[in-house]
Image (tube, rainbow, N blue to C red; front, side, top):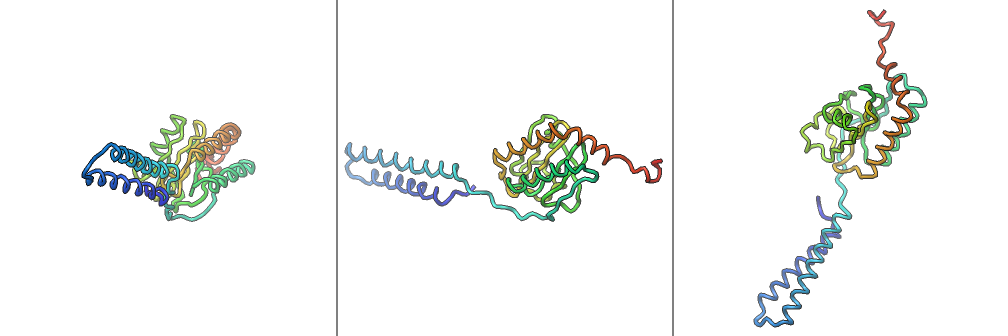
Length: 228
């Protein structure tokens, strides 16, 4: 990660001061106690300056560059969703996309895709893989802060190709909230807390409705040939 300009100044000043202090000690013809004490103090101050610069870069890091992602802005609900559930999913997803660095999100319940919002992939389908299953089994969110470093990243091509970061948040034992970020390491601790809170709300207040919706969406069409 690049170091901010404000942090570079004390680092460079400290390194320069340390080099000059050592040079002064080595070039002196006579080394007396006063010169030694001055050299020690100057060396300590130089090291402190460099430490200040390094700590500054950790406290105020440069934000990762936002990537250009291919996709079309959209909002797609599963058919037959009750109006109250549509409002809940619409409200929550709008907040996620505006209050966090999310570029796209999906809500899945029992293998049924209920909501797609944000930048949408062309194929319009997503199949949970090993990483999603592990999140469901453990009941814990999995944050893939830099997706290109993970061997199982192909699992999320159906979410949106080229995503730099993905967060997999389980919704109880049956659902998934998947959020793709604009840049690597973009999701903060407060973002994770907010997404976990919304997932808990969906589980506590909407689980029975979600079960009914999944049955309705997955039910075969009685008018289709061979279903009578």
